[in-house]
Amino acid sequence: MREPTVVRRRRKWPVLAAAAVTLAIAWIGMWFVAASRVDKTIAGWREQEARAGRVYDCTDQTVGGFPFWIEVRCTHPLVTLRREVPPLAIRAANLVAVAQIFAPTSLAARIEGPLTVSEENGPPQLVANWAFAEAKLHGTPGSPDFASMSADRISIDRTGEGSNVAGERLLRADRIELIARLADGSAAADPVIDLLLRLGAAAAPAVHPLVAEPTDAEIAGRVRGLPALTPRSATAWLEQLRTRGTNIEIGKARVQQGEAIAVSTGALGLNARGTIDGQLQLTIVGVEKILKALDIERLVSEGNIGQKLNSLDRVIPGLSQFARKNAAPGIIAGLGAIGQSTTLEGQPAVSVPLRFTDGNASLGPIPVGRVPPLF
Image 1 (cartoon, rainbow, N blue to C red):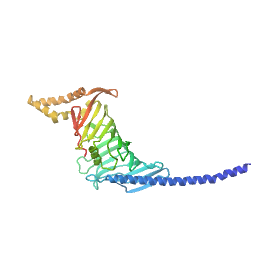
Image 2: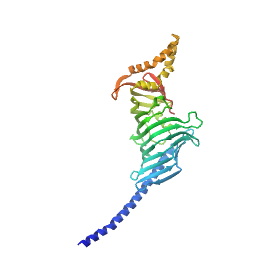
Image 3: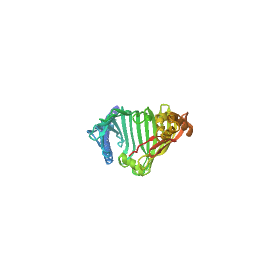
Image 4: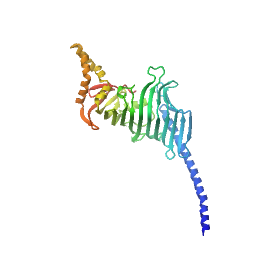
């Protein structure tokens, strides 16, 4: 009785072996089909970007990752921005793009530094380094629906040869993350884009004293009014935002620097001169520190305020100097009186509007600076 049972069990091995071989062949075929789709997707992205004047090249490109994922390795990637004047060249050490075999239109790219920015065929002017940097894309070249970029422990330095500020640290941050997601509509018609920017311990002392110390931020916004997500240069995107009257809605922004905290909501847009118009409602803990970083004493010495203070010398010589010394504390106290007293995260705060008029910024009635035209 046992002999027939043994025979039947032995006969299963050829069937299992055949099934395994068939499965292996099918898996290999699926991998090559997925790899082909990834290769076409990357080629499509490069073609799409080239139409916007951003040309991508590699010293060498290889496809690997068999059997569980598809890996495209680009040695010494180069991005040339043809529409900039003069054209700019962005170079990195290596770029590795990875896609899962079952999701060949979702790409994750690891970027190895250093990254340099220069005029085409010129010496580096900026150099960036980081511990880890990654970019993610989802969707097809004609219909993207998600993109993100992030970097950990990043620094950006000015290295322009012959410049008096060569070696200047422009930015350092523990983390930077930017996310763009298609929230409504489609890439081809009336897209609504959600944007999210996160900063961890970011500082840019060369840009402005206000951001000289480590700052944490999370800023969420929404862009409406674009006709389509067609390839364009950055300048063309800004021009379209202006001509269509598109605003960036700030759903909520939270910024913290030490004990000072600010949250805001509102909307910003571009006028005919390419400068910012709009208003944000700010709720601030530690407004004194922010005004000090804005160099309020200098601000009261310039513009209309400074002219009015100078006229005091006609009454009593030296009175304007005395007024300047006491103007800043008075402005701080006045801002607290003009703004609405409230609380933020359990701490006393003041709520005031931050207005942008043709690029000129004012915190309540106090002018605090000017944002230059964006294009």
